[in-house]
Amino acid sequence: MSTSFPSLFPGMLLDAASRYAQDHANAEALQGDPVRELGWTATLVPEETGGVGGTLADLASIVEGLATHGLHLPVVETCAVVPLLLQAAAPETVNRWLEAVAEGSAQLAPLSALSSTPDEIVVQATHLDIGYELSGTVQGVDISLPATHYLVPAEADGEAAIFLVDAERIGTPTTSYRTMEGRRGADFALARLAVPEGACIARGAAAHDALAAATDAALLLTATDTVAALAALVQQTVNHLKERRQFGVALSTFQVLRHRTADMYVKYLGAKGLVIHCFHEHEQNAADLRRTLRLAKVSLAETARACAEAAIQMHGGMGVSEEVLATRLAQRLLASEFRYGDRLTHAAHLLAPQAGAGPSSVSNLTGSAR
Image (cartoon, rainbow, N blue to C red; front, side):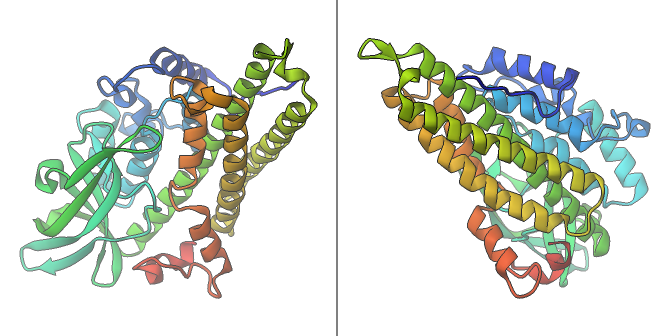
């Protein structure tokens, strides 16, 4: 039983993330703020504002390294969504906040649900004489890392807008919980929250484009996470079948298990090729990129679920223990289907008569990007 799992995005960032994840994979609770302490928030920040000036492929290396060892850190949210949303602001605002993000003096996080894309807006903004009022309930926000400010996508007077709001003004969540894959999630209820005029950093086309870019990046990096976790899961399953014995022989000698593992490996190879194609489309600024990412989401969700269920079954009783890496990887794959829209949501968008039509409360704002 021979398999090969070359890295999607090899390099120093992958090695560093992999080492950190391996050292902290069994930690009971997240200590400190490793994403900012390791400088990963500066990956997409331009060099002129104190960042690294990297690309999504660089960030994908970090995502791959963490996923391989089953460690959950909100890298996509803090390192991709945040800087891409900030790009919508005026130049002086962009430079000031990107520099703060890069050096860690400000801790920004998106106030958006992990279960929907950043451009699925649920917060309504009412323009007043002295500022704005924000209203809406945002469920499933990742709160694994501390935040001093939140970036809040909203609809203001029929157009997309992005607000930068102090965390103290947002207040504490109405409820918090542990998600299936081990993240810390929370729900926030904004009830006519008053914010100053300057809290709105972007409106209209600039906000629309930034939300679209953040959504594309989130879908792309989540796909990378899925494939990296899938590769590690197949490898763990192969090792388990080689090491475990039944009736005096290794499980890897049973033909039905060999065939099932081979099926998992073929599915992994197809998923890997799909992610590489998506990155190529992103680099080429393909006109139908969102459609490609939606199709990839649907395909990867089906592949991930099938392989997760197969791995759990082949691990037997060990497959339901979170102490086993394969179990945590299977949980990660099952949960990934529901990050940034599940496969049924994306399939509905693909099948809609009009491109981008769907359940979003502001589909008229974001439809052209979908």
